[in-house]
Length: 307
Length: 229
View 1: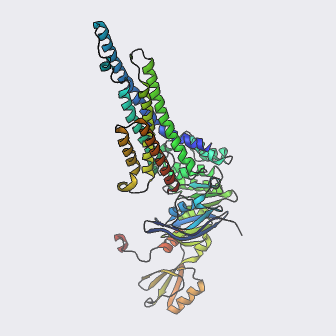
View 2 (view 1 turned 180 degrees about the horizontal axis):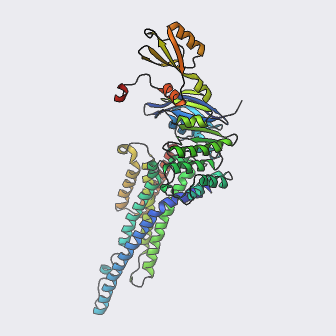
View 3 (view 1 turned 120 degrees about the vertical axis):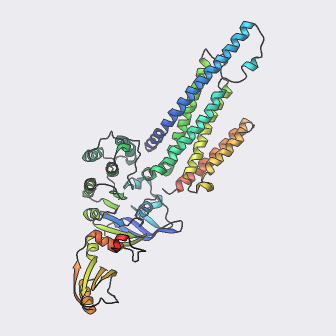
């Protein structure tokens, strides 16, 4: 069994009386590339900050590299790379200045050559000041700074936010470079599901502060299905199929979103409900994620949704 | 090495404010010293040429650096406030706390680098003050050089600037709402100034400031270690 590098147990965080994260249990094994996805305000940043000991949990605990998050020692922090949300760096420093600020914290770990290569790869100059860089360029500097000491665990909070597709691709290439180095573990939050699918082998879905899914990408892809059933007359009033997440009725067609329902059960239910035929509609990861995290009851529709 | 890296970063952020404060202090004080020196020499010349016995206390009743000391008071307070804002408020606005905190250094080391940088900045201001006093001593234009008491007062003002820095830091670190206890740090400093500026003896004032300094440092240390970023 592979070693657990990150573990949370019942991690809970309340801001005033609002729960940002509730009873969050997560285990990430060494060498795993984990995409951390959730809607805006789902609790991704809060979870990351709690794991890094930047926030204090209301309840529960979190461990990183075998050390409690609230008492991470400098030695442990040295082994964890962190790319902050929005790539906030010291604006008045140059890239070279940031490098010389950063390297004393990594003893002999700092890889000058790797950092220079990364900066070169991103077509940046070390003389450039952070305040003169675009959002995408800051993201690249941020990644280079996090990767240069070759951390065992890399945590990135929405690293591709606000980047154009070309820069995003370049950024992901940089990430893949790290992943190629054996034994590295990456946890990165993102809204862009195609990035998650491209890079990661595990997916963690968080919704309204609660862990909804943690599995391999393949399993997630296989589990969520959209099934379209056609009925000769009316759609049955009572739908009691296993793993039902959502359903939509239009005329005599029924659309079901199912989680983890085996094919034979779908066939059996379709027959028992009197469906003329049914088909499993292919979905991409983004569609699956949206369906998976869609609120059950939304207050009201936007005007264009009514039309 | 780690402390040095942190210290250099904090010092670098404070240096523009130090340069501004020092230039202001030196330029205005130089002008004030020269004006005062001109007054002194005029009275001195008149008294000698007329062969009168005059009340020298009336002529030289104020020290040549007294006005400069007042300026030093406001400059050091301004510098303490500016550096405090730069070190503890600006990272809130620019959201750089996470980047600073997540590194292989303890929070106490990060805080001590900030405090040492601020103390260094105010020490530099007091060195500028000493240079100014040195100039007033060696300048041929100045007939009566400044008294050591006034020079010492300037250094004491630089120390008060550091206390203002601590007050600002405490305000920034406290998470309470601004209309409740958030301003406690600066309010505490204000109370200290009210006591200092009332006629009391210097020893009492000095020990009082040491007490205030200790309270602020303990409070800042505790708050910084417990703070959520």
